[in-house]
Length: 466
Image 1 (tube, rainbow, N blue to C red):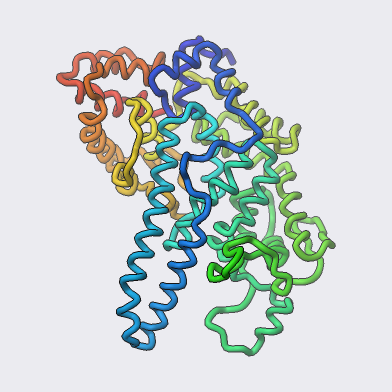
Image 2: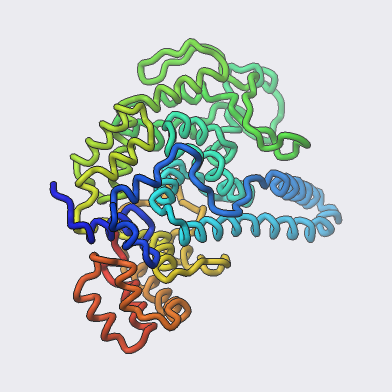
């Protein structure tokens, strides 16, 4: 398959592999489009969004303690509940501010980064290992999860990324792993017959999602018995309670909660006991060819097409297996694959991608949470993926009549603030390069105002797709 000419390659490099072109970025990429992308590959940690705080354990602890005290006082119908309410409201607001800061800073980084392919790659893996929201405590862990468990590993070994993601407190909390206790464990024996406010037993959520969504995929042929055995191996992995004075929120292995005995998962028997048992299973799952095939297809679907070319999937799978899951080598194979450079854009932007690319095209930076509020109306509220599958990739999920109308309404309000005194025809050339069609260029040039010209650019088929 022949590659497009250099001008079109440059536009594709920035708008398909990246997050949309900033002024001058396509011209920079034109010198060597593939080299422009490969220069962003690195085994050192991917740069986190600036100023995103790594730790909010203290804020979570304070809120959790106040909430618990408020609930208990309410149950007793104690006058203390009324006195605690202002404190709880203050702590809730402080935690909400931290969450909103995470959202805004990640968007601002996306809008300004010079390594947009590296950022898209990191966002892909954050969505692959989705940690969805549900309450303040869970939501407050998502920013730190991306920063500490995902970004440091996205160009390293998949094994390291897998272990870091699955054992992070955010994932354990999201999938209720901290509640999982081996039925035959010492802790279960201690608690037998006790009255408890929660059910005691095995929780299979984490094991099931690792197999189904994070590694081998449903077509690998694992059974319910494999899920249960894996869940037994995972027992004991938890995190220290947020009420602990020191090391709160830290992942650790609780030996007395672990189900003793060897395990067999997908035909492999694991004699190793304790914490090493789950780690051995995770490492084997990372190395399985089914994992390479499943995730290679997912990468190709994200970057190139909802129904990706089989040849592209095969190239990625080959690079994965040849490098033992070295993700920088898989990314390099994606960049080198001619199928990834097809002239016709096949991907429809998600709402988040649409906003980020709009900010990049106009050289603007989101600074306030209100600037991202439209994402909720568009169905992609930040940090609120509706299931462990993460945000959908398919065009059908986003290119709905209601979604298009809401994008248009947002664009009409955004354009007057963003265009300034600039010529929208110039912005169009900078944003799309050789992807700009004569029809769209003519419509923008003939627009009655700069505002209308920019709105036409942002709603054009070329801009909505990548």
